[in-house]
Length: 337
Image 1 (tube, rainbow, N blue to C red):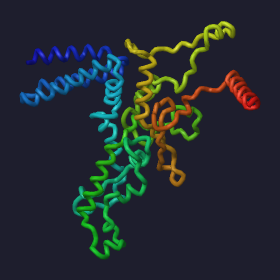
Image 2 (cartoon, rainbow, N blue to C red; image 1 turned 180 degrees about the vertical axis):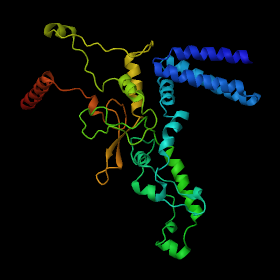
Image 3 (cartoon, rainbow, N blue to C red; image 1 turned 60 degrees about the vertical axis):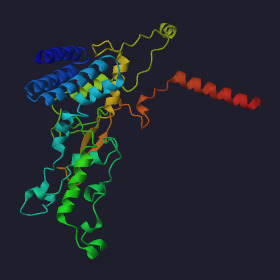
Image 4 (cartoon, helix red, strand yellow; image 1 turned 135 degrees about the vertical axis):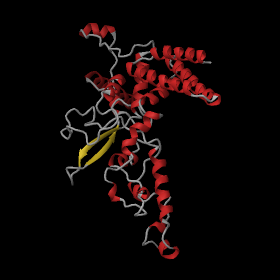
């Protein structure tokens, strides 16, 4: 039995070595070692069989991703960059608690665990933004009063006067159920972005982030933006025009070491950036020691739900002259009619 597991592990490592970037190879090598080690430590035959089925499915996904199947490759990127799986929980864990929990007193003063959920400023911004969620964004008043909370929870409401106040235990359960259901719909950021990557002249940039979490001290986000490439790249002019105007052909360096197309790989990373929100802090105008946040996407992110002005090519003098010629042709044709 163990020999077949080791054989499967060697096949897994061969697929990992074929991945197109160092970060992916490093991540899935560690993940594979942990998964196969867990299989070997499992004594129950039924549980070991289930875990083997899971790692075999991961191996098939890696093989499909190396073969150029975009669905398998996107899933692999989601796992490696914390859009799904264990890393996603580790990224969002620091945002699930407010550093100042005294704002919401516990339901039972004798039990600290009866305190209602507190939304940190970072999590509240992510919940109320459509960019960082898999579903529609919440309204700000939903964080104070969840949609499923009855009117009896308000002491001055008519229902509370007629039927009596709502049970505190029930209110506690409703608030925590809403909190747990909603944060699971959020894409966690990789780090706190001191400024938008495209805004190099941002005067409101901060020297230190207000919260350190995730890949804050690493260059993972910068590497991801570099792998996705520039938001728009004009195609090279025809060879005859290059010779006439002595234009050198632009060379696009290949950051990948795989047999897949560079353009295809860049498109996969650009699609991944649409699921990686950028959390950009700025000092609050009321209090310099507190921060408000903006949720943005990288300029080279590909999304199907909104237009991409950054991906439009720049209109040059030749384009303007061509557009003017088209207008003159259309106007002359109308006059003839």
